[in-house]
Amino acid sequence: MIDPARVPRHIAIIMDGNGRWAKQQGEHRIVGHANGVPAVREALQGCSGLGVEYLTLYAFSTENWNRPQSEVNALMDLLVNTVVKELDELDQNSVRLNAIGDLESLPESCRETLREAMARTAGNSRITLTLALSYSARWELVQAARTLATAAAAGTIAPEGIDEDRVSASLCTAGMPDPELLIRTSGEQRISNFLLWQIAYAELWFTSVLWPDFRKEHLFQAILDFQNRERRFGLISEQVTPG
Image (cartoon, rainbow, N blue to C red; front, side, top):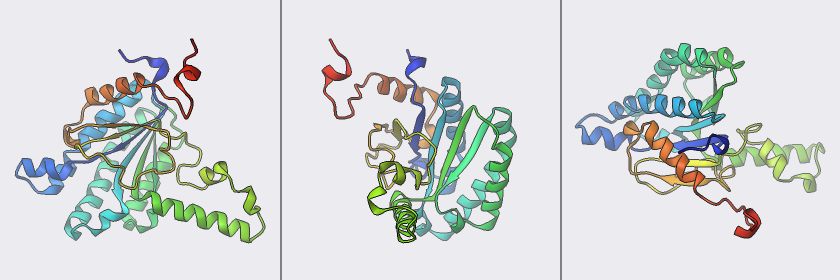
């Protein structure tokens, strides 16, 4: 049984397997992406019901721009249509919508839809749903390095004053706690350039379930597994659990 007192504050998910799911069904890849929307709803409802404060989803990486243009266009349309369709329910359930990544590279229709949705839900406080769009961790770290280098060159900060806190404050996720649990679907066991700084001490949970088939019970399995792990942060077991 899940211990409500030890639920992660922040869960991040790499939503993988939409294309393979569609192929198994004899459908086009975009059908897999469309069928991944209910899985997002399941994950959000499951997290919200357990008291998770932040849910971050890897929705579109910078590398995904290299996919066939027809698929990219369909994904952008799906993003806009989904946000518009789900916005009332998000607002009613006090979900704050957030987005991170190179958002300026998104089509104007996507940026405008996201701006409106984030503004409308800005005062909501039950859970923050963050979509990582046109995102990669290396891009994020380069942007942070440039920000800090510019500040140092301007004399705003001294180079020796750059520490972990300043780096964290320069990332897209500034103000958010680091994820304690990272979930990846589809059986792949890699991070794929996602939140590399933030997941330094996250517990990783991999499942062979393809994203369109992901449901609350899979989320609960991941959280139960998380709660059964010993999180030492460089200490030894006796220090974490004396006696």
